[in-house]
Length: 426
Image 1 (cartoon, rainbow, N blue to C red):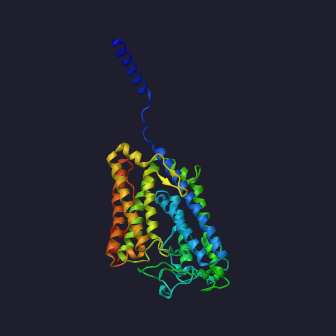
Image 2 (cartoon, rainbow, N blue to C red):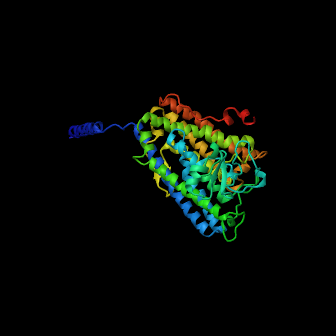
Image 3 (tube, rainbow, N blue to C red):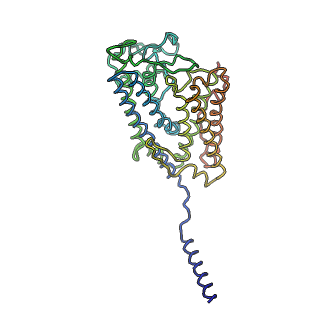
């Protein structure tokens, strides 16, 4: 009896072992699947950017139909909401030429706002680098570009994109995108490193009770810029659709696709965000070197850039409707080759995000970003520097990830602010 029981148990164990061995081994993460998911997240982020831009456009329509302080506030709120998904998409720059070539239409900065509208006397009247420094196209139906007379009677999306944007081949002549709209909603921030953002009155758009003149043309400009933002974002949604040009390009070669992911992560982390957007302003203590300078929304802008960098590594993204997307990730691919390296990369991304969240909390409760970078503000400076340090440190690990995946030499964006600070003061 005992022998039969033991025999049955042995046979059962052998059968179970045979069945287990017949199960397929856990599949290794496929680089092609990682890149495909990266493209899917791009499509989702640009779709959310488009959806929130359409909501902004609707809020602008309501404001222009009834220009009150309440409808202006609603348009500003919609603008800030629109920045959240867009900033998370910025990690697709640098590694994807189709994005980098397009980005200047929607997020170029800093801008010489005197090109667009009236400015405070402290802005000055001319610039050696920009003949259109105070062209004020809203007030002038005829302007000169490269010495030629240009008819600006009709302010349309086509006029802004084809004629005015980067007019005279000057990058500071930003006529379109989020920051042109931001200026038109908030006006100049004249507070330096003191408290307060721009305070444009709603009556700047009230054609029956107009302040600062040309309310009809100002309204035409704002609506044209908003319309253009929607159409430009639609183009990028189409590009990242499953059969879109950007998706086909990045997924054509998995190794090149991984290179694109890490180039975007490293270049945004180091040269662009840590350097040009953060360290430069901190070195100069200059509120003009602030990304969302009219609205004082910069702390959120930087935070969501960092969230986007982490998303490119983890393969996770939370959509504006709360839906959470996950899939094959760079993190999983790295972990299969070097668990310790994946743990290091994840920990550094988290540390940077913690520093960014601390900066954002300070921005919401204590002082705006332009105050944080002000001269003599040791505590505020330290909060910003902690985020910069996190970005720099995570870039070192991004470079190690590149080596681990045998991707060869990848050139990441640099910045004088980090690599040669003395040049900033020359």
